[in-house]
Length: 74
Length: 379
Length: 46
Image (tube, rainbow over all chains, first blue to last red; front, top):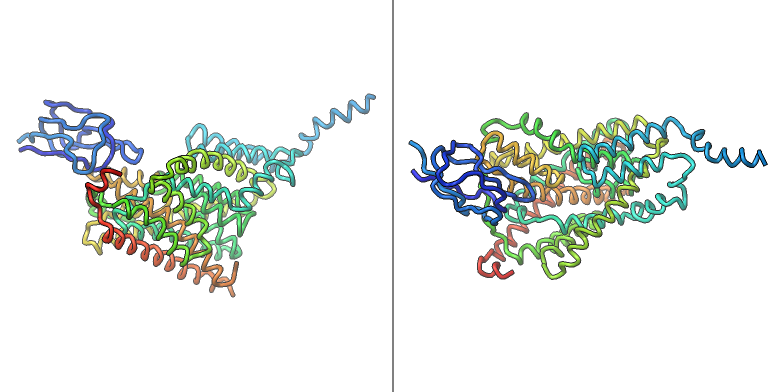
């Protein structure tokens, strides 16, 4: 099943720590978003493989913008 | 001839003979403040000038705080007239984004609860035998807001100014240590993991511009004695939001705020003369200030719990702790605590709302306090 | 006025007054948001 991670907070993408094809576990840190002058870790919503990364470093994001998609491992 | 030499030389030794134990202790205190500011990064912008001011004023025979001494001149011009804290407030208004409060106006109630420590501590100080005005000044440490504390104290209890402002500023930077245990003690696991989704932008420009104007008028009419505080912070915010006076906004948030912070810091340090500062009273003030901030946090979290119940579990009580005005430290603490219990919980925006509300709250609390005092005929 | 009266007055009127004032303000903001709702297109320009 595909699981979408959308941005929980408005801010700027500081760092994307994963790429397409990477395996992640639930609650692994996948990126950092700078919001209100604070670095916020963003964690994976599920265990599986990353199949798309929409977030680009230094881009501004709004709440609910799509960050990445995970194909959940069964 | 030889006698003239000896007399001249004695001028260089007089400082040593006039050095008293209190001076030495205060120079050590000043150095400690410098150490905290420089090495530990505790509010360096304030603790460095405060620490240095403290050292300066405790060097004997220099008379920097005597009439016409340069520190006395700065102090009389800026602190006695209330100008410095008010100018800082224009800067705070210009720096702070109040939109998280506007997104969720209920947070203003948390900003009110986060000030209850002021009044509880005031009562405690009275019970410990402080007189009315001293108790007011001690309570106001609970505003957790340097300029507010300085504004109130310099008017009504200037002899406590050093202790109160050092307490206000140093506890502000200790917020990340003071708050989490209280937050944990007062909430259940179930409450802490409540997820609050951030909302998409929903505040129009018109609202953001009208907000400072209307708040100033209403707040000013309710509590006129605090209008200088409320008016300056809202002026700064209006300049920020209207977008047509960018130069003034920048000047208030950077140049003016920086210059005033320097002058404010050094003149606060200058009030820390050993003879006045080294009294048991100071220690009690510092202890009460600590209690004030703990009570603020507790009241904020407790109101958060009330909101948790009334909204049927939609509000995470942790954000109540951000209702104090230590901005933005307190919001960060809440965000981190929330994530500890549920990694997919991003409370930041809501905590920022409560935190910005706490800034307004501390100003309103001080304003209400002064107006109540006025109403009772005490000031 | 004795200290006891003073303390209790500050506690009740102070806390109540702060809560009430901020409560009024939060109602005003909620009203403002109703009267001037956010419109995406209009805001993009500013």
